[in-house]
Length: 303
Image: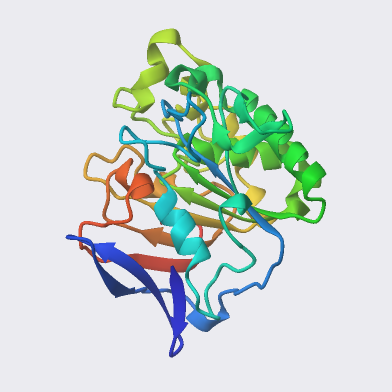
């Protein structure tokens, strides 16, 4: 959780052995106090996972994206967003688990007692993520439309990992009427400028089928809009950050599956860009870092 203390942003995060510490954020340029602290009511949060992810929720007995132990992978984020308790916290307007929804790449969800989709309980397998970013964006639109029917005044925050960042970016690019609905997009190590490393898991998971998802991610050259890039998605989403606030996180893994200079949009700035010391997967499904420094910059385009 972020806190503003004596004019500086801090993040309360467990490091190393899980002991909670306050890690100071190094933010530049400009005064950190200028960062927004919106007070928004009726917030709804949508989580989106990445390529070769799965929900492991076939029994429909639990909420969220489950791990092998049956625990919600992103429960640490839910807890942090609902129990911060500080009047200066960045996130307000969330009352509990009913405000959090989980995207399914198969468009299949468990059903509630009313027979309607329960968007807290997605049902999909890793192969469902190979259908491409466009198809997933269409599924996201169906999900959001349904949520809006039930919550007409809802303001939406999207928190996405890996390819999920491309999905929400594509959705916003082709659905301009939805942009006013979205308060923010937070991406965790998402290849917003594509990736040239496609033979390493998890990006390699869909290669055998020459899937649309692999094609949508692959991009050798990305430094300007005229560069050669196999992905047709990367140029389309480049400027969406000009209309919707993006907050981007770079895992900075040693292997560099998604190098830091791939984690921001090509043609627009991130309101806040943070560099962690984690692997591509662990930056999403664990609340611990390796104990290294966490650095952030405001209004960042090129990390």
